[in-house]
Image 1 (cartoon, rainbow, N blue to C red):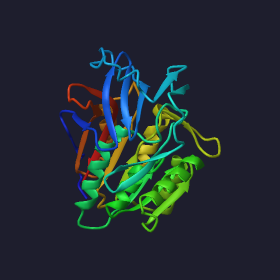
Image 2: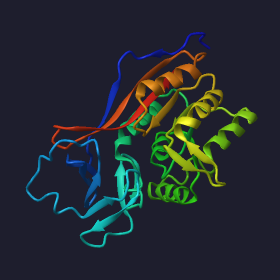
Image 3: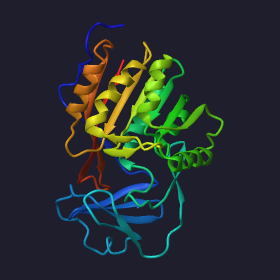
Image 4: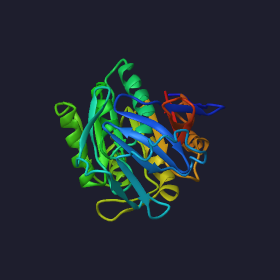
Length: 300
């Protein structure tokens, strides 16, 4: 094991997600983005889009669904041109998953994370040994299924029984029911605390916490209050020859540099390297990009 701190990148990396067969960022502007999710064209709020839309030919007016926010967080309601299906299948690589119009303005997955999925897929397939992965705040399981499809064994943690159910549906849809995936409905911090006591270790950890959340027993999660402790706990359950720790966060007051600093402080005895930066959605015509979240990732 190295006695040196990880080497932290001097400059940020922009991880770009471009459209694929089941998703596209069609246009953006005036605080909104126009996207395609399979057969549906969807308009959602995006305050960062401070420019004017490029398309004025009625493409926006023909959207199948529009989310009208009621506050600055995620609350609001959908308006539909016609009643849509409750769910419909999408795919990314070998992984299939169901999209649905949730009450939280998203569609049960986050398309900008495709840049991270591609990185995870390559990291796991390029390993000389099978990897044991922990996915905290795993939501509907796309990242977990990407890892499982690449050959890893996965422990998927989420505090929502509904989200766990959706994740298992996605595993069935993907034909990955027979893969070594543990589905656990539990507060992420409580689970990791127990793993520390047990002496359990993992070769890779995916940590994608919300700004705010509640555990199944009423546990309260606040990103800025609770992430430092959880990062420290995660460092304790990384195997001695671990491959990676990927940290992602959606918060206006955070940065990739801050996340890199947090990882560096907790992985001082691991050596390796830390990259940091931003995830962005790239518009179909390549003219615009929307920064969506920040990340830092340690690799051995």
